[in-house]
Image (cartoon, rainbow over all chains, first blue to last red; front, side, top):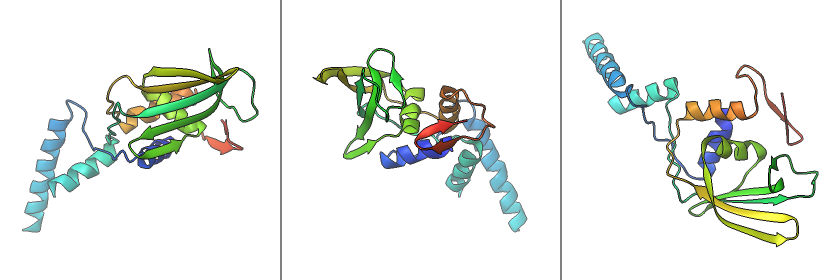
Length: 45
Length: 131
């Protein structure tokens, strides 16, 4: 419910979500994305 | 494709963030006399009668929960204080800086304001917050 309150308010104000990663986690997610894409490519072959 | 995956991760991990610029403008009106519609009280200026926030061409009259969302995350600085009627104070405020709050942090701070546990159900009833 709280998430909806905040999301609705930001929507009303036209503040879009930025999908930012907190510092320190960005590299891990980049690495995760690489692995994910590699697995996808290999499984597609 | 990578972008789509990043967005999925962001949603799963709750790392969506909002950019709230300093140009956000908030006008709150308080009265020292109790009002049946007032649900929040300022220590100094009394019961809150209304709370409006503006950003660009958008104007939003906030509910109690929305006001609490702003209070929980941002420090506001008063740029103007007026007394339109005796006993009524109007404050015009803006954030003290640009904010990029994470949604997950914002949620926990908002919950903390109402001193409820995250597992507790919260419902709105007649404009009041029950726990």
